[in-house]
Length: 459
Ligand code: UD1
Ligand code: CA
Image 1 (tube, rainbow, N blue to C red):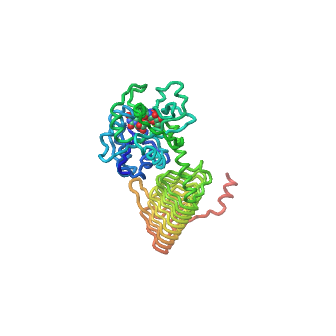
Image 2: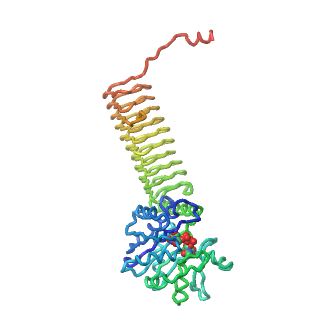
């Protein structure tokens, strides 16, 4: 559809959001509101996508670029004088070959590619088309006014509506397609004679109707067209987006989700077949989970990569890699730069940061591994700490293949425990331990015979 362009309206402040940040930058299920709209447009392969920016234009433009959706350009609307004015600002930037123009708001994250296609089909035969919806509670939306013949006569904004008009439950979704020629003709003539003193894009519909040209209204489901004007609507939209994504994972991929209402998976997260997501699981920021894994309960992973068959429960992970068949948790904190190899174990009250643990190694409980490189088949016993920070610099600990680090060993970095070596429990290791050696670094026990009995007698 190279001869179709889209104009995305994203210049408004979003007063009802009560935020320092422009509304379209707020995120739902891991993606900005404007990002959701651009993702819905992307598969259409339009010739041009113009995003109208204004309030916090630099940040919104940066977000448009960050979405990675190709072919988007921004147009600056320096003053936000209404949706009609936003389109007026964009029209001169339409490319020569454009015949039709889709106009969509930047605050409708539930819009789908499928409904955009239906909108384009409805507007196929000239003039224009718009999406509407029947809502139980139409508060806040423009109402669709139809004539006795059922044709759309116009849209009345809530603030301009009479009591009778407010009772209309058919609302304007703010999503339209117009022939370019029609837009060129009508858009310049809008006026601001309304309650908000703005140029309303909705007036285009009335002007076309008055001219005897029909704008076809296609009814779409409420949870496709819903706009997000405040944070209550943001939460509702995010819930719908998560539900849709989980539904896709369950029905198209084969993921088991015990309780979708208690599972929070961002739309950019991929999960493989036969993986189970237990309640309290939060997967964010492009986390990938392989096949046959078990995640949760109560596990929060951000930007993580989890291999096939891994079991991860009651765990927090940030930018961590968890290998296939690894077993993590409960109460484990995998911080940035953690890479657990295949079939590794990181158990209760283990914290790792910038730590690479190779295949088959175990850190079963109560340990801190920071700036550490751990080989294969290593056992890091209970209470081991890599002492990586001297208050000024961070240093690395290396534990080579097959080593056994005894309970409560302090490894004062930089230090290396050689392959197959042991450290005795309670050791403070300040020097490298050669391969296959035993290092004992603790004071000898002295025993005072009868001491306790004497104390009891003499107080
Ligand atoms: C608009 C429609 C309303 C419809 C609703 C659907 C108008 C006058 N009203 O109302 O009929 O039911 O959407 O969600 O069109 N924007 C700009 N520049 C501006 C003003 C707004 O780019 O000068 C952008 C906003 O950033 C937003 C979008 O346009 O993304 C819609 O604006 P908003 O103020 O949210 O309009 P609504 O009151 O929701
Ligand atoms: Ca809106």
